[in-house]
Length: 309
Image (tube, rainbow, N blue to C red; front, side, top):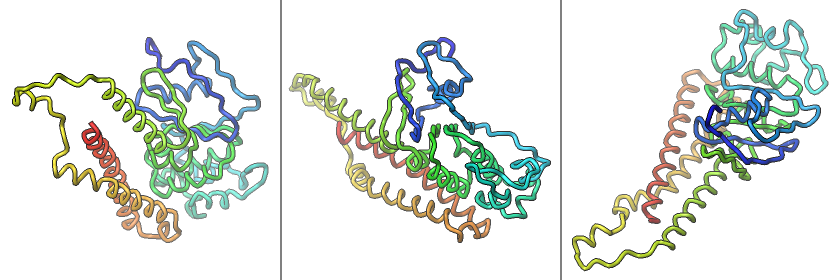
């Protein structure tokens, strides 16, 4: 892109049924890589080969445009009463019920829908398209818990190839089996598993590199001057930091359990039927827990670096 090389010397073979997550910081080239796969961009060097009879469905982070004046049904089926899924006919109302639309809401103009309902309609549209490669760019942005749970369920049953760009570690852990990591220095690495597996392997690599660095570093000459010797002492955990460090894994495990319990709750009929205020309270709790877990991981890494220095 311009004079900047986003990635180079990358070779990979994507097979039917692969479920790949693309991760990395903003600006490292994830969306550009997607555009290369879509043919919207051409590589400056190398070659990209696409399989024969490839049918791509693309759900981008800016979303498709819906006609606000038309009903949910008409936006989906263009006035028809049936839709076709995998060669079989299904009534449009029945199909929309799979996406949590009651018959009444299915006849509602799109302009009257909530943000979550609009996202569910977009998902309903894209899963109608015949495709053997589905590409999702930041699909979880602005999704409510119901829609996020629905998307994960749909993808768990999706038989074709999946490529998804996301910063949501839990979503990636639930839907992908392989992760491509763009490091921002022109490299793409492939890792087996989801985001958590990637993070674990990168952390292990960083610890190994740090240990190797220590082993190859010559000890400094002993200084008989106590005052100057004190300056060379390594930073150690304080008493309170050690207590915090010792309990951090239990705290993280507790947060992950509570998040998992809420995710299970979001998938139940009782939750779907609950009041808007109860849903809002649960979703706010879920958002706060995810933020707290991110902060806890960061804090653990900070303390771990000091403890193992």
